[in-house]
Image (tube, rainbow, N blue to C red; front, top):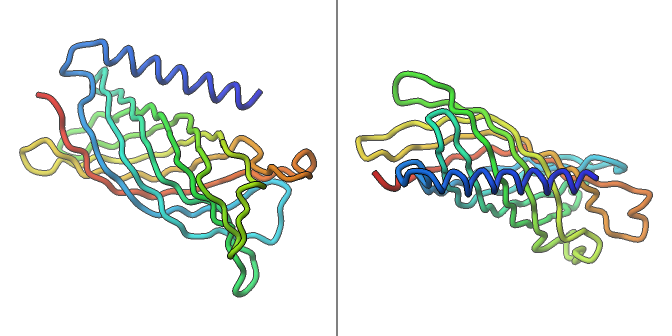
Length: 206
């Protein structure tokens, strides 16, 4: 049921994106950018003796602006998730994903060159690799993960060219059990990631 709800949210966001692209050319894809930063990743659910691990997150994004206050921001990110054993010198379970969030942003009207925003949207993640020390764990982790991302950020206009430095902080709440071992019906493990990113948005069009 939860997966179906997330898929419906993704479909709705994509429909909104296509609808926005059907408007005036000056209001469709307004910017393209790159971003990168840090993940604080951990697991929740039926799991103990784990703690957050610091990892990398980053990728590309686009901005579709159907109105001055609404922005639809699809992203394609390389996201490292997982957790660390809560003992001195403990191993890390490192999960590498390609993540596709579709964020709906409300751009808070302000004067000046700083434009804050709040956002939320679904995220679908595709597992690339899973390692616990030197052991390959990919067969024990589900290949697709569904989540909900929400947070806040700000765009800061730089110079007269229309480019903007972007900052955002978000939490991506894992909604599906990623455990694919024999005990998956009894033990639920979900991703949770706090992310801080900085990027640059290049303006497109007029």
